[in-house]
Image 1 (tube, rainbow, N blue to C red):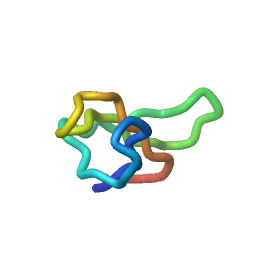
Image 2 (image 1 turned 60 degrees about the vertical axis):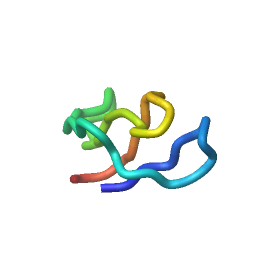
Image 3 (image 1 turned 90 degrees about the vertical axis):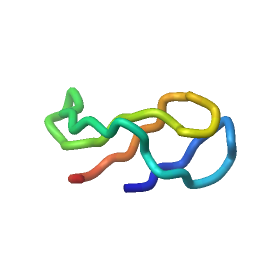
Amino acid sequence: MQAYCMKCRGKTEIKNPKAITMKNGKPATQGVCPMCGTKVFRIGKA
């Protein structure tokens, strides 16, 4: 799965993806950018 990295300014593959639930109950995926190590986040089911 890919997510947009704000630091690299491009789409990257999510490293260590983890399915989470946001406060409003919607699903999302959170992980780390493999290039810079910044947290990346994607809303929606994995």
